[in-house]
Length: 179
Ligand SMILES: [Zn+2]
Ligand SMILES: [Zn+2]
Image: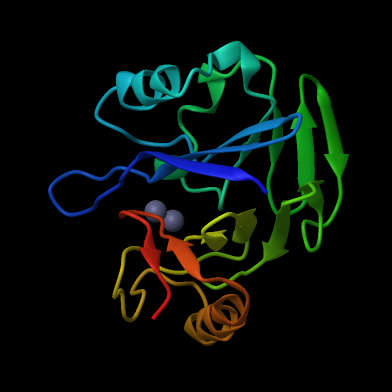
């Protein structure tokens, strides 16, 4: 089973901050959506409290390309970066489709466009259930996404994720159980 820790609960409204998460599963040490936060310490201090240094992070996963979820990628010097269509590592851009990619035994990616055409969801098998780290929901109880580039597609992928996940880690809020 993978271990999932939310490092920072994002928010929107008065300021905007990304929900930032840490996944550990065997050799994989991944940070998801290291984007806008009040300060870099908002990511680094909780990581240190979990006993993880920036050098130990092997991978970064971004839910999509908006800067509020990406601007702190460079905190992690050695990572492979995963998005919807490629892996980026140093000067190597390796194209691949994200759908079905397994980063470890308990961590896989789904293509879930709707908010933008570049959205992916990270599914994590944890002791508490299957967590979906995703921008399909901005926070718990989020209804219509007024910024969605394709609302119908977004609804389609929300339904798909709800069939697979028991925990949602939304783009800008604390994690919550499905239902
Ligand atoms: Zn966005
Ligand atoms: Zn966002």
